[in-house]
Structure formats: structure tokens, C-alpha cells
Image (tube, rainbow, N blue to C red; front, side, top):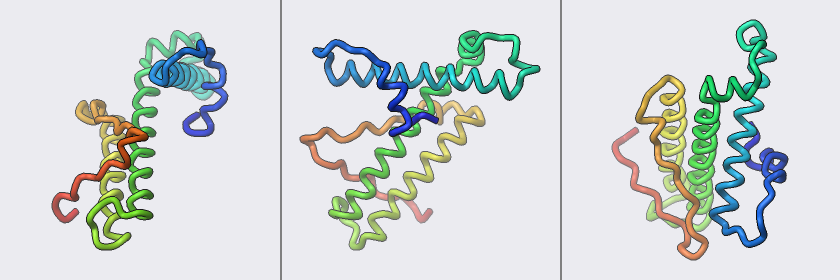
Amino acid sequence: LPLGFMAAELISAVKLDASASRTERQAANTRALVDGMALELAKRMSIVEEERFGGKEPGELVEELQLKGAAVRFVQHYQRIMGIQRRMYLDGKIGISAAPSTLMRVQQYMVMLDSAMEDLLGWARGAEQAAAAAVMPPPAASAGPAKPAAKKGMG
């Protein structure tokens, strides 16, 4: 998937007015990423399953199979994982939570990462609540790192 640094090719094609706000730039970049991912997926599906999809144009497959929705979900998952990892490394390095050791601080994030992965798997299996999983936005530059929620239960 063209996420992170691999998204550069898709995002570099986005042309915006110099006066575009950060929100407008992010939205345009996300649209370009989702559109590019969905179209590339349709092309690959046509090649891999030529008998099933070979006679259809990629754009037709994107619409018919709702591939933009799938691409959106993967972008959301990526953003969620990156947000958790960002906070995990910050907490491990500078101790933003009250846990007494680095290992204990990091463990709560491992639970969050497991939950994010389970949500994605649930979505892939058709679980509706997983499709509506909240995306963790990056903390505002001036607000400092967000404190993670306390771990519930034993596992």
C-alpha cells in the first residue's frame, strides 16, 4: 500500500493553490491517496483475476466493488497505528504516563495496537463496529502529547 513515504508519488501529483490551508492540503492529499489506491487495486485485481474482472475498466471496478471505501479504511487504520506508535515512543522516551517503568508504559500501547489490528480484521470480516472505529488524530503541535487511557483488565 502506498502509505507513509510510499505515498509520495500519489501526493506529489496534487496541485493546490499556495493559499490552501493545512486542512485543505490534508484533504486533497487523502483524496489523491484514496483514489490512487483504489484505482491501483482495481488494476491489480483485473490482472490477477482476469477471468472474473478482466473485461471491466478499473474505474468501473472501483465503483462496483466500493474500493474507495476500502482504501479509506486502510488509510484510517494507518493513521490510527501511527498515532499509537508516536505516543508509545514518546512515552517510552520521556515518560508522559504515570507508569513506573518504560516496559510498563509501553505495554498499554501494545494493547492499543492489538485492538487496532483486531478492529481491522473485524472490518475485513464484516463487523460494522470496526468500520466505524475512531481515527486517532495526531496531537496538536502546541498541545503536547496526549496521555493514553489506562489499561483495563488483565489482558
